[in-house]
Length: 313
Image (cartoon, rainbow, N blue to C red; front, side, top):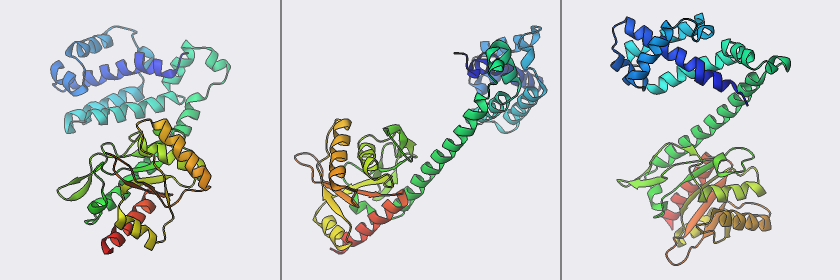
């Protein structure tokens, strides 16, 4: 296995670091300052600078495009303090360009001749596919953030929050595993009397709620979002008055596979996924209402209707 990442790691990245360090030295930076800004050691900076003086080393990668990128990065670091995430963005943009028919591709084919024999276009295919998936994942995370913000703006929603806090999950189409489900790490907590997400949404941030949602998807693929709120007599009455469909199932378990299998069997028997599923808990286990929908905003709208209606009961 000889992926192009090997060329990037062993040749392109050292060359780029060396050129950036060289540019910064020329405008007055010390090796210690460079090391701190690039997130490497001073000894590494010294080694990179020496590398450029050794004739022939990494010569194939010293192209105008690589030099131009290094100069731009050094200028940004010097003028505006280009952050580590910013540096990563610059490096990855260059990596993509050079892997798709650029010098990295050329060096890769020189070191692995079989690639030319088979007409390799793997990088083109990877980045085309990856862009589609990244765009979809970005959209899903944005929708979770937007729906969460709507909850945070609701002064009444705190009355629907259980002691175990709230999470909001949204799955990729055809999701199969917990890593395909976006949710809030740390959940949504009650802070100074208002709901507040403790972190930005991430994929794989939920296990229990994700397992229930995956079970729902296995029966009704259009149901891709779920939230947990409290359950009591007022909530039950609100569900009835709003004519939301409701079913009851105990899904509390520390074993996620048990949660998934129990919920999947339950939904399969129903033949669909209801608007709400109630788990009345038990000794030491809080009663919970799970609300389902096709998108996070649909789920949040249902929950806010429940919030408003339960306040009237």
